[in-house]
Length: 230
Image (cartoon, rainbow, N blue to C red; front, side, top):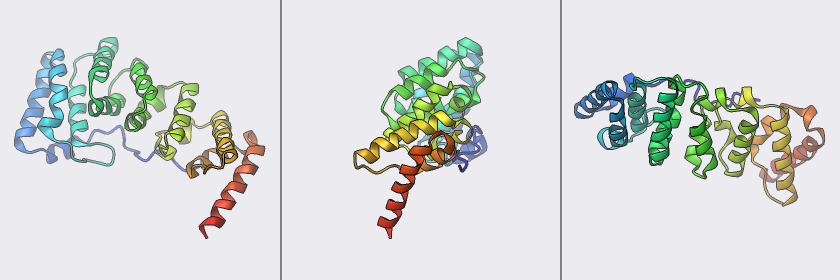
């Protein structure tokens, strides 16, 4: 199975690129906002929503947009730790619009939270916004989400047609049970006369002893697909 992490530097906040992308007015606002939050943490509740309007929303890197990176700067300026930090992060996520929620989810690996922010990840995974589901399955989830929940999240990605090769850490978190679940899903699709997403094959093939019978059926499906493409 190939490395499924499309963002190997996902945890790195591109501060230099962000500063280069901002005009002087936006850069001054971001610096002042971060300083204000460091001095008075509750200020983030007012400044966090304003980041997109003040800094823009252009694509910055493959992983970050400008507003997400700016919001990450604000979050990392919070002088809080432990449960107090987790409570503030949870509040921002719960009361934010989708763009703000994506920024929170992408910033989780940059914060010293342990497993205290799993509530935020679980809230995103319970929804049906595919951009939030994908953002939730980043480095933080890879490190902290329990195995059973991680497997269910990957299966949800398949149901929602989110490419599983965009799920962070799949190479290390995939296991026999996940392979079996994906093989069962593929069986159901085949029985219903529906196509099987191609990106489930690497996970299933990585554990052939766990899905011997299913793999034989899936290989036949793959061969049929190849013939139809010719």
